[in-house]
Image 1 (cartoon, rainbow over the protein chains, first blue to last red):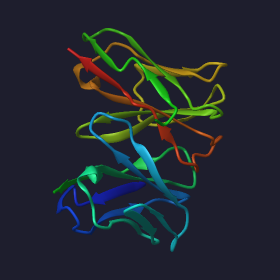
Image 2 (image 1 turned 90 degrees about the horizontal axis):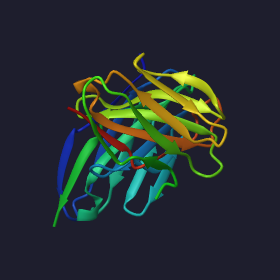
Image 3 (image 1 turned 120 degrees about the horizontal axis):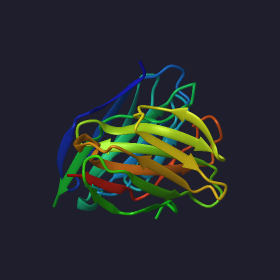
Image 4 (image 1 turned 180 degrees about the vertical axis):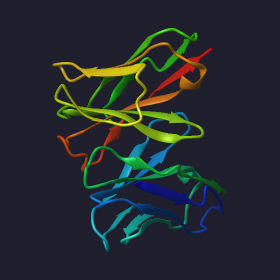
Length: 110
Length: 115
């Protein structure tokens, strides 16, 4: 069964303290790996799409990378406004839907 | 703002009732997806429509149904509501056709509370 697992479930950082969020996947014929940010009570906001192992995408303090088994979201020198839940999702070869992980809730304090 | 709109924002109803949630996709997107998000289950895919046709079904209960209209807006109908149906319901749209390989853009959601 296709599955996406994110770790840790929660992460507390001090402002400026860099870290990484992990997304491991077992998906038949991965066709895309997506990262979203979700604020409480809001809809997920699209961040990145990665299609093949070795690919990297960057946006401000965020950098997403992809290997054959997992993806990482690296957060460099985070600020309090980066506090949110970060969701990872994969789509398999059948392409029927996004398979979401349960997310990592990031809290950044000043 | 993703460009996807959903109404209503909040809905409070009683067990056994029927409700309709509405979604308008981004301009130009032909695909609409519905998801349910509860605290313990995370985001769960319900159903996908492309240009008026059903393309894929996920964990959608028989009490739930959806359709996409010629103007591309979509409605999710939930009937015989139970307490466990209380959740956030999201609609997403993308340029994808049958295969969901492109990123999806999510609406702000409808919070359903069943009392």
